[in-house]
Length: 349
Image 1 (cartoon, helix red, strand yellow):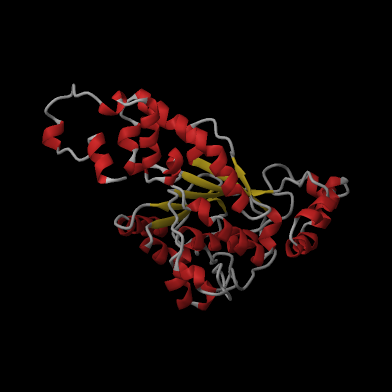
Image 2: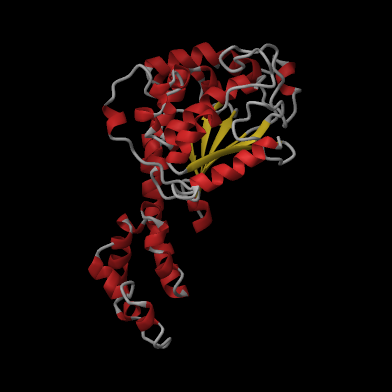
C-alpha cells in the first residue's frame, strides 16, 4: 500500500491526533462507489484479499459494516477467477476446494485433496508439492492437505487420454488394480474396513515421507541451506537430484497454518530402516527432525493423536499414532520461545 493511500485512509496519523475526536468524518465513504473499489484494488490485486498481508487491511476491513461488506463483495467477485487459475496450476490429481466460497471464512481456509495412491510415488509427491507453492503464497488462515481415496468418476480410458504419459503409467502401476477391485465390488476386505480407516492399508511409514516433504513447502529456504547438511534429510527434499534454479529464488509460504488430517493408521508389520533407524517402533522419523530449521523460518511443527493429546516435538520416542500434523506460523521472533515450550512438552510425552 502506497504512503499516499495510507495517509488518505488515516493510517499515518499519530496516536495523539487520532485521539482528539472520535466524530471525524470518513472521507473514504464520501467518494463514489467506483473510486472506493479502485482503493480496494490498490490494497490487494483485483481486490482479492488473500493476496495481501492482513496487517495491511484489517483496520480498514473492520472499521465499519459498509466498508467491510464492499471489500468482501469485491473479494468474492475476484475469487472464482483466481481460484480457477490456481486450480489450473495444480498437479493433475490435486483438487482445490471450495472454488466458489460462500463466506470469507471459507475463502481463508482452503482444502486440497491429495490422491492416496501418490504416497507410493516419490516423483509424484515432489511434483504435487511444487505445484502447491503458488497457493501457499496466499495469506490464508489455513491450508488443509487431505488424503483422498474417492475414486475417479471418469473412466480409465478418459484418464488415459487426459493425463500425461508419465502420470498415466504411474497411475496404472499403483492405482488401477485398486480402482477395478472397488468399482466392481471384488474386494470385500476393502469395503469392510470402516470409515475410521483408509480403504487401503495405510501405516505411519506410508504417510511420513510426504509429510516430511511438506517442510519444503512451508520453509522453502530449507532446500538451499538446510537439507544439504544431512544426507538423510536431503533425500526428502523436493529438489533432490534436480537443478538449483528454483532453489535460488524460492516462493515464500504465507499460510498461517498448514494442516494434514489423518484417519486411524494401521500398525506396522515391519520397521522400515529409513523410518525406524534403530529398528524400534518407539523411535521413528518425523518432519520434526528439521524443527530447528523450521523455527528459523518462523514455523513450528506439532501433531496430535486420536485423543487430541499433543505429541512431542520430534515424536521420535512415542508409539502413539498422529491423527493430525500441523505446521503453524509463529513468527521468527516468537519461534525460539515456542521451541522452549515444545521442548518442555516433549519431556512429558
